Image (cartoon, rainbow, N blue to C red):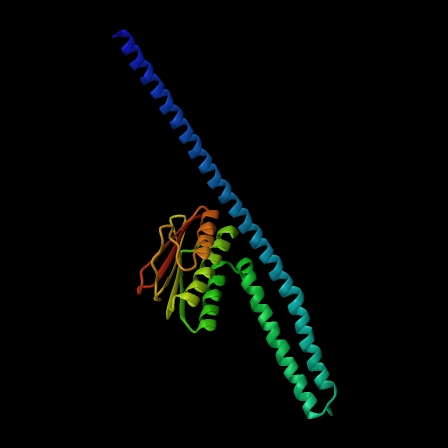
Length: 252
């Protein structure tokens, strides 16, 4: 009996030690997974920050260098057309056509520079930049786009302003390209030391997957990472036939 009891006790001790070893291994795995996730988020944050700096540099080069040179070309073409009053009608017409083409190219470059990084976000603040973004979306797409704001502090921290702007930009682009919407409403409010951003459309909607993604999941991931970069959260609500709403809550 004593031998059987000793054997049973020994077996139980070994089982408990095995369980403790398994629990320890699981804990180490959990900690390693959490660390890996944190490392990935830190890498994503660095990539987004580097991307924004590169966009700012490209925007500045486009606006301050290339667009200025195009503007000078237009001035020189106008001067050339006026310098020779007796220029044949055909040549004069071609000069004016060339002026129009260069002016149109200059406008395209200006718009491209604005898309990369809107200077008014730095100069005039988030509210003005969002108002311009929404108006630009309405003009480009023909959709009814509106913007409302209340209680937004001035100024908004630059990193928060950039994240809110990019989330809005991505949401508007998604709605215009994929949602088959007629109306898009953008709202930004500041309350209790928090910014709340809402972009709602009346489009086709979709069924979000378990990760909250949809037809443009890469864009969704980018928006969520931008919110997380400034310690915020982003949620997407959508149902087929009932539109989509993107909401971000960002602490100040």
